[in-house]
Length: 126
Image 1 (tube, one colour):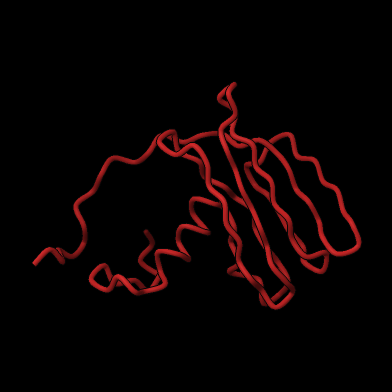
Image 2 (tube, rainbow, N blue to C red):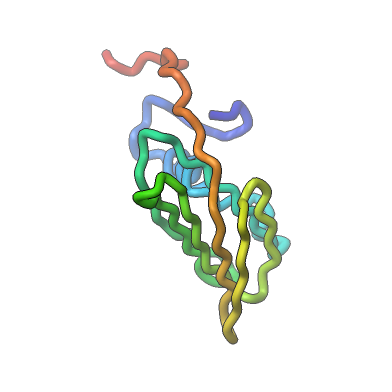
């Protein structure tokens, strides 16, 4: 987690986990969506076989998914509104297609080993 993200580990109803999972694991970074830009940077880890989700922007919904194939390769797909610009650092073997409303981005993703478990910043157990 980043120091700049407003999170509270004591409040389960906070929105930070959803934001962080979409950005850090799924790979949809909408921090510049107000300017019509999205960064696609999925981060699969060996302990997770797939991830899927979407984020709504003023330009429309961005959907993404990645999953591990039987050959062990992680394949990523995203659909985003045609009005948005995008970049995909770290995505390999990229292919792009379009229709009238959407851009479809596909590629493969290098897998990361999960980080070792850390002690929480705040103990909310009681």
